[in-house]
Image (cartoon, rainbow, N blue to C red; front, side, top):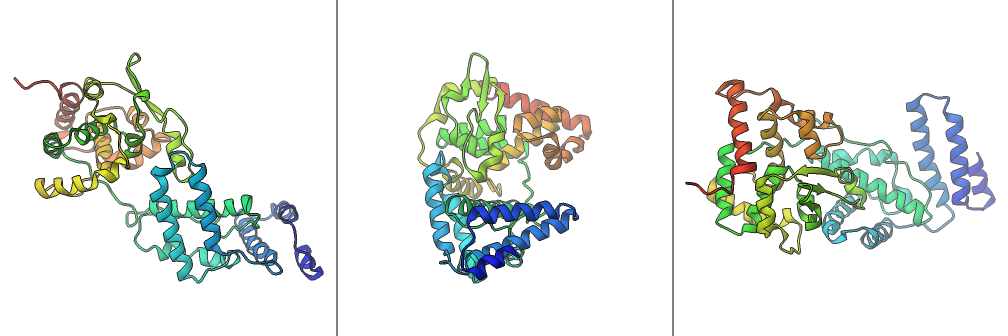
Length: 362
């Protein structure tokens, strides 16, 4: 084997030569079945890592993670908003490394990588997959910028979503929406108007955090959500959520009031946590959090008879299949008043939210 010959001769194979040999190996393996080829690629990745470090100084994972975090925080836009999330993920990865006794870069193997999902226990599939994506990003960083050989240990490892590992977010009922909005209206109006905006547009908390006046195009009566591309590996899906939402009368009044543009030093969903706990204690409504307002918008719009394609576009989903996966039940569901009665009730409620919310009660 060529790599083994390099080792015996005392010369450490260069990064270029490793890539060259890997490409030859991949070309020859293409005749094999897809799964066999992938496994050979992964096994070869482990061999490359081990051989390339036999004669040289081994790189500590803690140094790799430190360099990655420093580089990410320097190059990523809106870095302050993501700092807490990235640091939390890296902290979790460090704990897993410690449990598996992974100290050096070449200690990470395919066998150990397969145990990550099991080690995370009952965490949701979405959370674990984001952490797996982060690990792969770190290894790509180590290969491209630290001169370390490629490592395919986590290649194609993902957690499949099931009913057990996927958190179902129940929407608020109409009565709960009224009670929450009434409670918020007696507190700081910044939170009231921001959450009302999320309820009538389906905006995610990230969009609410980054929103500026430049997103509002009043002449066209359109709200441009994510008008510019945002960097950051973990938030790649948000880069494709750019969309345009028609400005309703309620949205125009929210803009005119101006409370949503008050300068804030923290992410919106983090600022709401204490407020939501107080609201839960005083109203008796459980599990109040930002994403439920987006989920409520989608479920109420579909229950009111909105076309699923339209709702999918407003939510910024990649395709209609994502919308159907999460909200199909609300398209075909019924209430105590029957299907037609459900549509009528929700249609009146959605119309009130968009057009009559700020009208004075006579």
